[in-house]
Amino acid sequence: MTIKYDSNGLVPAIIQDATTKNVLMLGYMNAESYEKTLETKKVTFFSRSKQRLWTKGEESGNFLNLVDIKNDCDNDSLLIQVNPVGPTCHKGTDTCWKEENNSNYGFFSTLEDVIAERVANKDTKKSYVASLFSKGINKVAQKVGEEAVETVIEAMDNNDELFLYESADLMFHYLMLLQAKGFTLKDIEKELMGRQK
Image (cartoon, rainbow, N blue to C red):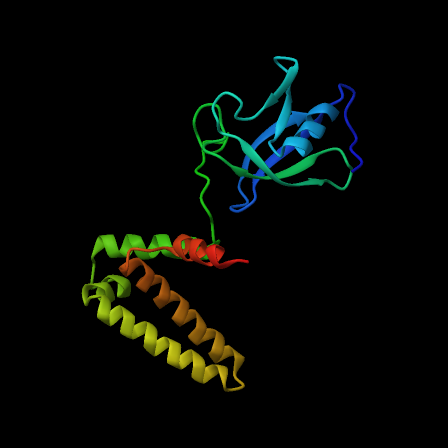
């Protein structure tokens, strides 16, 4: 890999969780720390303040296990994907931006939060979610079954608009059922990842 180091012999290294895709930290590497990272599979930086190599986790045990290294289009910065062991920041947080390193499923994560909020509010007159939850898990599960049947029916038809409409209904009610059972998409992700060969 061609790397353009700056006049100090350093290149910025953006550290990203390989699973969640969250940015964990930014560090700097020189040629020696880059080679050590490849050799040990533990991310090693060049500390500008200490003027020496340091392997993330050498004192804390919170290593960054190397998954992949990519170079940007100008060859002057690195994207390093890792599997972190424990928090990344030296202040004890998951990231150096004080964010939790949780999986995010885009709008589905937002929808999970909205469902949880409406269940907690228990306003059965204003909220369909609260109303359905108040009827118990059997009613939530029944609704998922109904939406699944409607989705299958639309899949066998030629109306893509109706198929997408019913698919959205199915997904929405499935997210409700997951929460009714005390689970989230993260639990489904973990189960599917466990099946990966």
